[in-house]
Length: 372
Image 1 (tube, helix red, strand yellow):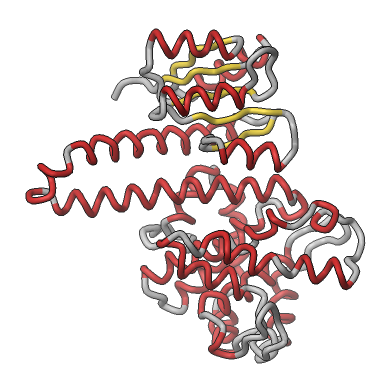
Image 2 (image 1 turned 90 degrees about the horizontal axis):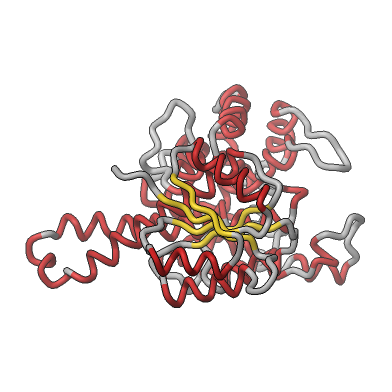
């Protein structure tokens, strides 16, 4: 396999040098450009780049304008934006204009590796799908099996985009950074213990990962408020369930996962929101998620308190059985040894972002000793 090539665009020579060195160490071939015009010159001379990493704030033509140009003239080349600006609106604008991912400066080599791995994989799948579509007529009769494989690749490509959306939410709500990935892993482990079918497991995993995606639509003054929310602010915050549902329900393969997003704050006794569902009116995935969510919330540190132990969390979940939680699922949860949860959390923190994301996006094929 030929060495994958990456074009690094940044007006700061030191940044270009450091990023290029990191990429070389990771096995990529890096070419640098000091601005948008030089980057476009490289692309006109040679389009065989697997990825462009571009700073946003640059003199002259900025990174977002360069992104527009690349998407128009070189649509097969994915672009990842680099910036020191911690602003969710800049991130969402970049995604809207065609970026496949977003990386904040300063970053560690592991973060760069995870983002580049995702983007290069996105490029590979995009190229593979383009080739396939050009030859579709000839392939239909003789290659039905390849059609199935291609559909799986398309689904994986969507999962890469979903992961980037989840990272954008973490960027906005840093207090709960990493929560989506941990609670997804806990939900998958509990669903596996219930012998949930592989197809349903995939739906539940996506619903768990995207459960708070509606918070992107909540105003900063409420989402980032350090103190207690007043009744009016709480009512707006509670809209995130429906907002998230409306954001993803129109995507065909996420339609069932959207129901979990909609119902993830419902309670078994009917006192939850937004619809006051009770018992089995609540989707099974949302009932499983509710326990996993509480487990992570109680055992994670917050600026205003230390996380509790897993044993203490299990006692609280037991106490809320038949009120907040489905008692049948609580029984399965209690049958799992405490060590399985502590080991799982340690494994989540140990795994590289790229490997963890693959496990969470495709839980039906993960067979490692840890039930991620």
